[in-house]
Structures are given as structure tokens and as C-alpha cells.
Image 1 (cartoon, rainbow, N blue to C red):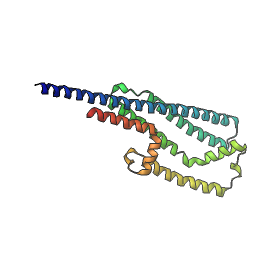
Image 2 (tube, helix red, strand yellow):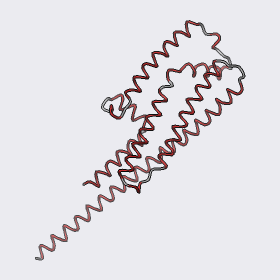
Image 3 (tube, rainbow, N blue to C red):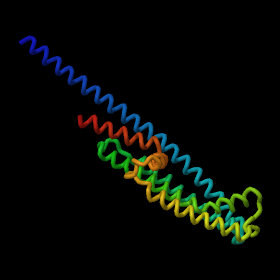
Image 4 (cartoon, one colour):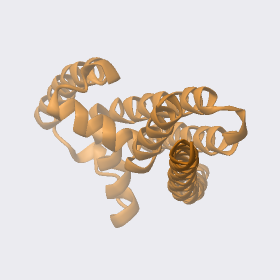
Length: 217
């Protein structure tokens, strides 16, 4: 009888230790999730501030030039791209700020998946600006030298670069079509998606999955 009591006490004590270990591990993982997302939140706020500065500068450049020139058209395109980036940054800040860890693991997992999907969507939009590289060239040249080079370029150069932009459009369209969480088995897709989503967000999603596994065990 005494041996049975000892075994019963030992089993109870062992169970309590296991519960405490799980609780401590879960708390540590939650802290890692929160710390990682705090970094992402700070990055996105700084990123948004940079976009605001860029947009303000581009708008001032457009206002300062009364003529409808190539650099002004380029500035308008770049301003549009910057606004897309700003909207993406604001969206990420809002979504991360709304994360509620008290509403259960499943809810947090869903919110993180939405954050990842949103980040990937913004990244795709940014990739779609690559074929418009001449906008960066014409505006950058005017910004640095104060000279509008567009009237000086010959038609052969312009046509060849328009063709190159067309090739870029096809290439970007293919890349964008492949960027999906379903294609993560492809190494190049995995790298691009991880870069787009952010290492911290990807790790946070992984930690949440570990917490879910702890609760299931």
C-alpha cells in the first residue's frame, strides 16, 4: 500500500512537471512571437515614414515643373509606386497591431496567415513596377543633373529599351504567377516568398505552430 502511494505521488508530481514544462515552453514561444512581430512593426513604421518622405519629394518635383515632360511623367509613376508601398506598410502595421494573443492559437494562426498573404501581395505589386525602370532613369537623371535627357535620346535607343521593358513584363508576369505558398517546394520561390513575407513573420508563424503542437500533445 505504501509503495502504491509513493508511485501515485510520483506520477502526480511527474505530470505536474510535464505541465509546467509545457507552460514554460509555450510562454517562451509566445514571447518569441511577440518580440519578432515588434521588430516587424518597427520596420514597417520606418518604411512607411520613408515612403511618405519620397512621396512628398516627388509631389514637390511635379509641382515645380509646369511642363508635361518625361521626368514629370516618370515622377508621377514613381509616386504611384511609392503610394502602393505606403499602403502596404500601413496595412501591415494595422494587421500586426490587431493581433490578439488572447483569442486562441487558431485565431492567431489565421491572422498571421493573412499578414503573410498581404505582404506577399504587396511584394508582387512592387515586382510589377520593374518593367517601368525607365521612369527611374529619366527622373533620376533630371534629379541629379537638372537636365531632361528624354528629348536627346534617339528613337533606336528608345525602341530597344521599350522592347526590353516588354521582355521584363513577360518575365515579371511569370515570376508573379509562381509566387505562391503552394510553390514553396521550389527553392527560388521559397527564397523570394520568405524575403517578401519577412523572416520574423515566418518565424512567428512557425512558433505559433509549435505552440499548437504543444497544446495537442
